Image 1 (tube, rainbow, N blue to C red):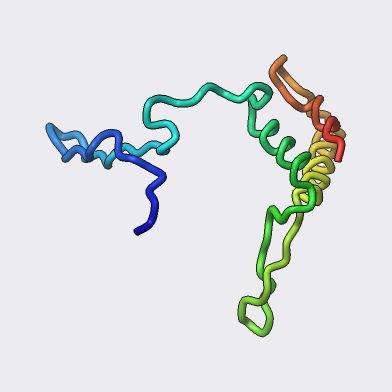
Image 2: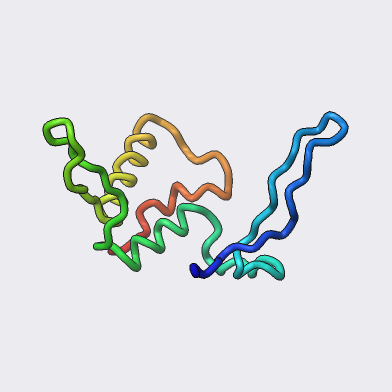
Amino acid sequence: MAEKFIIEMEPAKPAKDGKPSVGPVYRSLFAKDGFPPPIEGLDSCWDIFRLSVEKYPNNRMLGHRKIVDGKPGKYVWKTYKEVYDIVIKVGNSIRNCGVEKNNANDKVSSLNTVAV
């Protein structure tokens, strides 16, 4: 039997009084008694991506399959570092077009802080 990593927090609710039905609510088994506190320094998706690049620069991240004679072939992968380099180039291109950060919480200035 497979191990379950999610638990049902609330059962499904049938349609009632003109309101649509609602499916059950699930939560990670690790957060069944409430969500764990946030990890210091991981405040945005960029922080999570940056940390992943630092820890696993040579691991496969994004892949696609080449089509050979109309059939899917083998996967071709880009590593975290390769994807990061593309993201930096896209970010720099956007900045060169005149787009600047517009609030104090913006992480654009940290684009060049990953040392891999």
